[in-house]
Length: 230
Image (tube, rainbow, N blue to C red; front, top):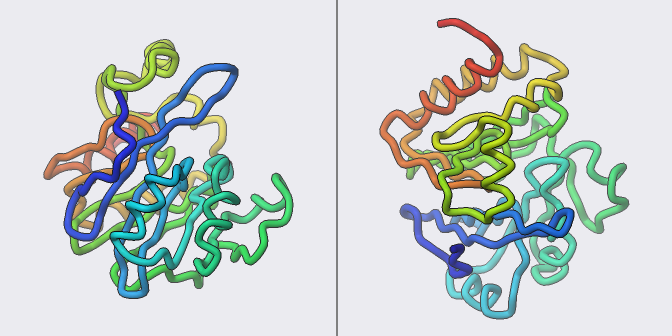
């Protein structure tokens, strides 16, 4: 069902699929690996087996580890311990939630991950998610701001997303609406994505979206949720 090995997505971009457990059920989880001039960036760390950690070292040294939002932190400490020389980036409020993280830097407006990686932090949503755009490969990278469930994930999560009406196409679950604190921040996100040439979206849950209009698909999904008209 899920391949634990590292998979090349584009030049300088790889992913690895893993899982987490919640309420006794398995859920899919994906980590994205980005090669930068200073080393590898790990976005949304997953459970790192000895085999997987070994595969990572063949790609290069890990220079940064990013917890993209207030919920994607389950394997952050283990990953940071394994790659102790890497910079650790966390969202505002994560340490209040789970305690002090040694060496962690809070993601701020002035934070810059790499020269060819842009980022946008959605401060007006309860997730406080930071999404990335890798310009050389035209790839948008997100944790929870888009899902794409189509039956290749674990049974419990497929059933859940069918129940919430977020299944069979790239979409945003309705419950995100209840976490919006500042609509202007979401509108700024959509403008930011629209201004970029996005040809694929790599998310942490569901199938990767490959489409020349991937950026527009992301934007339209959020416009439906926010009930915004073009």
